[in-house]
Image 1 (cartoon, one colour):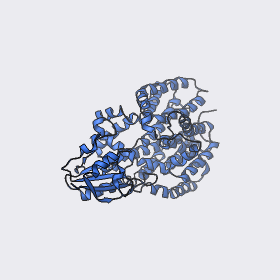
Image 2 (spheres, helix red, strand yellow):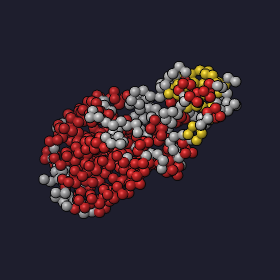
Image 3 (cartoon, rainbow, N blue to C red):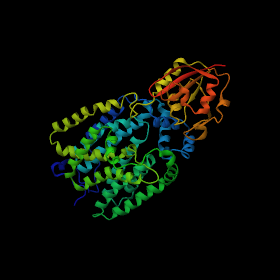
Image 4 (tube, rainbow, N blue to C red):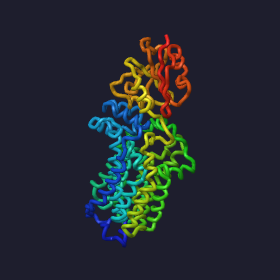
Length: 499
């Protein structure tokens, strides 16, 4: 069996995958169209959705100096340290608007589309590569995380690129430079998300099939993977020590999780079904290429599911988004095999785009970054800004998370100053993402502050009930509610000093 033999019906489009002197020149359209479509779809109304809770953490961490970021990740989010540093440099150049913070993710998704197209071309042929890249661009989940100021787009790019570098190393298994490139690709994967290193399972499957013909493959692969792991070991050790704090909220998955995860990854049940069906059509193509893509897409999900039945659960769909490129490659092969004419090829893509348009549209709503509604931080900020008087103070409900203070603070003008009444030590001062609150709330009130804004979750009739009992009692003793506004998911109340 020849590794990844080109399809007989389209052999003119595919160079011999086993040739050590392979030329990596490809028609520009192969990667240009997928990248442009992904970028256009991914940047459409990119700044429209309100910043999500995790994105606010990215904004907060990346706004610190490089030294402060490094100090912070020693306590929390060590696995995201590389991303925070990258975003810190980016926002220094381009600002901290929602569009600016999300643009690295959109660019990374466009890069991932290029890699998907090149992978498909190498494994299944030119038409399959083009189809895979365009299918990747149309997946609503790709657009969703092109709009996210988090590292998921960069993870997808790193995983797809690592797969390309592995294929390149397999072309010349005796070249130490190519295996070094592959090791660097794996390091990039781990620096952006450690769990994505489970992609090595798919790589191992390909190496096993190739090693039947070329024994030097084992040596290169056996050195590259441990080298990457050793270089990543500080992040692994530090991240492991923070695991319980970081992802305590992820529930242990049941058997149904293995079914539900696919529609979650695609952000569209219809798109998930279409891509998976096309992937099944591709199963009649070259066995080695199909096994490589199928294992790369499915095995990490199964492995993470199995690992999540211990002390800590890791089974959260966002952590497995990196499997989408492999699924797109496989679906592209299926579409190329099923659609023999250009008209059918284009029509299939057009129909998928139309059918997934409602899913795409919903992701661009103001609260599109929340599953079922969410807190309207911008609405809360507008209320405060409209009625603000110099000297006003503010109180946030921090019983659940720091998101309220971050969300409202992000949308308030930077020159509008409000003393955070019950804040004893800020996250920046602590080199953390969580604040420390005043141990004696009554002592933190100031007689000169006649007005205090209160921001709490929910829409309770009495907003003071949304605070811890000691904070609520301290405020009730000196303030009365003057008025309240209730944007989605929040209550913003103005308290006026009564004595």
